[in-house]
Amino acid sequence: MSDRPAGSGGGRGTRDAAGARAALVEALKRRLATTPLNKVSVASLAADAGVTRQAFYYHFDDVYDAATWVFTSEVADHVLAHAEYDLWADGFLRLLAYMRRHRPQVKAVLDSLTWVKTERFFYQVLRRMMRAIVAELEAAGAAGADAGAAGSEAFARRPLSDADREFVIQHYTLAVLGHLLHWLADGMKEEPEELVRRLEIVMNGHVRESLDRFRVGRRLP
Image (cartoon, rainbow, N blue to C red; front, side, top):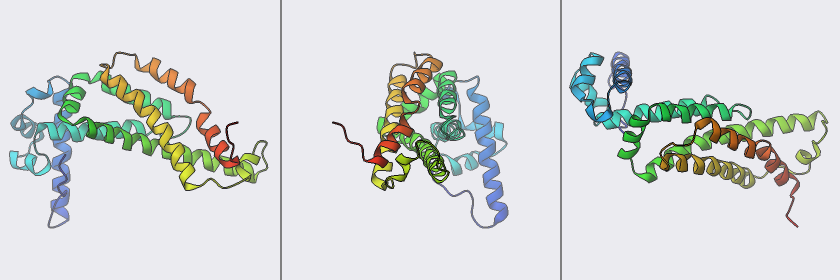
């Protein structure tokens, strides 16, 4: 993807550049609703957005680069808007439903990336979600301990080390990521609702329990 600055010179240039990119993004999203990605041209996008071809190439290398930018932004929004313990499943379901609904376009974008880049992107997004979930659970556990709530002894016995916290985040990130990548590799065949239902059953309560176990230093017999 491009990493060009949004503008240069003065404030007006920055606003004009940002407006041009926003117009191009909206034009591409409208096109992708009816047109395969490989049939979309730079000239048509520029015309739809009311900008020049030069303006397009200021922001993106080509149509695939623009589609990748749109895709990654949309995916991040679907997941991170629901980065809470009680809502993560809803965010993940929205992500799967979005990708299945735009299957041809998503496949075209992913095919234009290396598998390593695809894995890294989803990993980074899901890790941000899991980090937010763990932070929320830790805050709730600390509040319970301060209030003398039942079961708070697990949080009072010892602080959670950074290494243990990172391991919990990593473990559950990789668990969700593995199912997502397999779902993609299998052609998105399984119904998103069914996959998310099963994941939610398996994970419900387990992140909190993992944090508790590390706090009390529990070891397997």
